[in-house]
Length: 173
Image 1 (cartoon, rainbow, N blue to C red):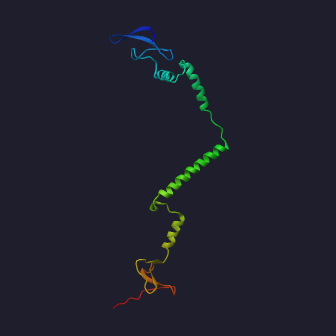
Image 2 (cartoon, rainbow, N blue to C red):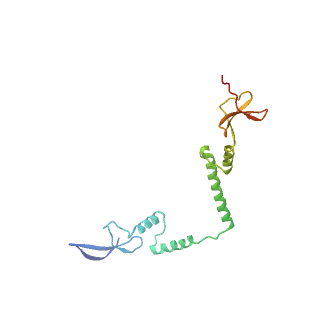
């Protein structure tokens, strides 16, 4: 560690000595912030020195190290040309991702939370516009099925032989 150029400054009532140290990596002179322990002018030089020391890389001044980095950055910023293969691969990747998401939605969504299609809504409307609704909790009598008539609000029986709806005969005894 080489110390050079000593200068003195007045700081409130204290006289503080400022010695310039030389960075062990880039060989630049600097004023240390911590006396006797600071060997490098910055964290960058300290990190680069550590890298070169541990990876058996020849130690070079900081100016020479910046040149290859700038050349690599120019290469990274170069825009690649578009090709049909690249476009096809991008489209295939997007479609595959969409298909996987839709399959997961289909299998992981409960029946109550699935979306209704136009066909589902049309079938529901057809069912609501019917006049007769089957009643399932009443047993059929005399081979006749039980229905609810929406217009009259009454229970009726459907005779399969005559294919007609009949009002039930009530025994008023």
